[in-house]
Length: 469
Image (tube, rainbow, N blue to C red; front, side, top):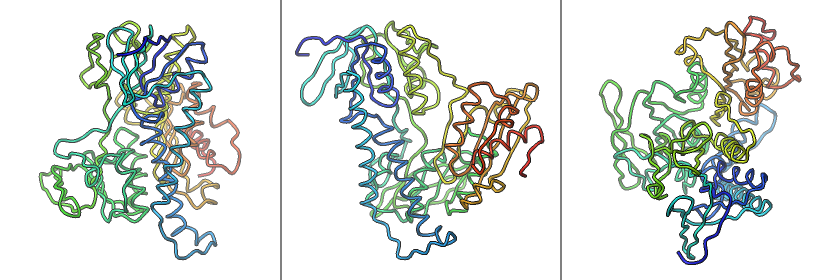
């Protein structure tokens, strides 16, 4: 590698929500930081081909559907509503560009050296970065891996970017498919399925488990499933896609049910959204003696230290939920610990959100988890049908569920299905971070009329004291 070795206090590999946030916090703490990113722009999967573009399309498609079908009851008469898909995609790309440039601006503001290219270890504390315009050698006593994850590809369903696509491909379809088949009823499959259903596609979701959003609270998941079914989404549960054959003009999908029967679906596009896997390939980890675990993840201890001294890892590439905000919190905690500052992540209070309509937001334990642990609980529920603000909005699908320890009343989990659930869950996460009881939430004043009042009422319901229903 030509040129002198560039030295830093910390090198971060990966400029996604974990890496770039860690770099900024490290710079604030006085470290000289370099960030290496293999893609042309900073921000990682989240900003470029994940959280941000998908939410832009979700919002745009909601506006399209609401304008076409939901305004009449509000006394707003419209006609001739048409879809301009190129304009919608252009706006999505504009949002992405603004945010990725924003990360580059934050690097500049904080004196962080951003390096574009692929990093590979050449030995302890040293990485070579290769790029089309040449290469650089970087050295630091501490290196943080924040390389994220990539979509899982199923055997027999190879991505071709046109007919069989991953989440990235589904964000950039050139036309609305007549029939979209989605493999997987998790957050990614339901969100992207919702986008294209609103824009005119027939959507069939094939899911191996008995319901949507596996791993989330089953009772609340059924509320979401009911709403999505009412909107026109079709589900094939306890089924799997055995084969997909690309044909002229589409793809023929063979679906096998739990009872062994099979049938075929003809689709324009097949979206495979069965989850993501850690991305740690191509880093030359053998050069520093680091081995991956059985799931291809990087092993770390409670301080994000790998078995190799001076080498750390955070985010999707380590154990735990693959969530952008989890990676960000880990990045901050990791570099604070490196700087001798107290850093900590409470994994019991990390919210998870499915941005469908209605949204499904969750933090803490599910009812099923509590039963499996043998924890006795009390549960309060409150439907948005009884919430004044939801009624004024005409968005009454869903409910709030509060799970509290039967002995101590401490809140163990809160689950929300409804409009703006992603906003309501923020209060829930803060309450749980401070070890709130259901009584604490129930006795806290909530402005009226607000959607958050449903959380207060559900908390009161834990002790059978709900007022409004």
